[in-house]
Image (cartoon, rainbow, N blue to C red; front, top):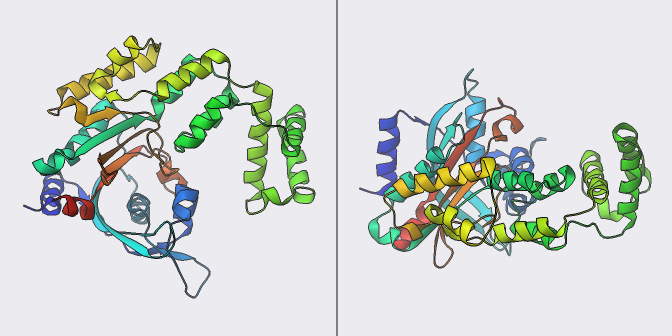
Length: 360
């Protein structure tokens, strides 16, 4: 049985609801929720009217929009779909069309059982000869947040690092630099604003941006520019990371091992974790040990890939040796509310049928 047919059969048997996702949708929700990376790859359409449209670039956002449009009082439930994703190639020379099947669990609370359970579902759909070519890399932004708390990283530094988590290169550069802003006119303005307090400081920034800012800030909204400058001022006031914090964060981000072995590896490398973080790590390791996988097929690697901005916690991606992505997904707890729906946790993933077909 073909993977798509097998998946549809499983979804129907579980009571999941099929979503109808169009190929042309308003562009704004994707631009606002997914960030600059997706925005640079979207395929925009010319047309009449004030609503800018695009070919669907992301099926998770499209699925959430479909659920919100349905107007249900309770949007929670299991939903599945099949559809096409359209994105420009990196050199903008052509439009790449990808076939996906996916599932979204709206209202699903975070837990190692739920997270690794979805990984296991996708894994079991793969033919055995494809499983032999793939490793699944998993990560949880909540672990990093708990580590920052354990290390007593100052609030402004913590917020900046978490904001950068979906951009691994940027995150590591911030940590390597000790989180100390470089001297600049913008830094001086930001420091002055923070010294005035929140209300007066934000008004000061708004006035400065509106009347005296240079071309560095062109292309962003006033509120976004002010927020970024305020964060810059807070970072300066916090004083950067200390040496032990920097070392601990570097050591944690350098971890790469089977999920089932994570507690032992942390102990061997003397990476100290405790409290809620240690409990979460042990829960993931215990759940991974129960899965009927070869241990080296399920790898924990923090901040392991560029992620769209809406991802908020656990994430996973199945990669071949050639870095082809077979399936991927994760948590997006704030996405439904950001798109105009209810504030509700959610989690999902999809499989790339074109890559799967090529491997088969």
